[in-house]
Amino acid sequence: MLVIRDQLLGVLLLALAISTASAPLAWTYATENYSWAVAVSSDGRYVIAGGSDGYVYMISASGQETDKQKLKGAVSALSISGSTRDLIAGSTSGHVLHCLITDRLQMLSSLETHPPADHVDSSFR
Image (cartoon, helix red, strand yellow):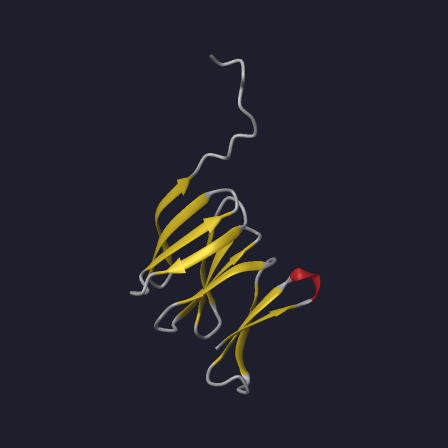
């Protein structure tokens, strides 16, 4: 069971309880800022958290940070494949990161989309 608690000053603690809701917390992890996206691997070995600081945090089942990757913009979406090998992370700025999950986050590819047009130049004909 994944328990998310918001603490003072906007620091988010991620905590993993091993059995039931009444079980004591196994560990906590404080991210640098708010975490907007969280994913847990299907084998339970990793928790991935995406923060408003732009980092994707990889946390082991024992609560240790094993890696982190930086995106441009706040991390707004995370998805782990059913095989627990691929991670896709997206940010508010349109940056998308594809990582292979091993004992760390191995970046396979990165994609940046163009920002939306704020206006159309009407002088173009």
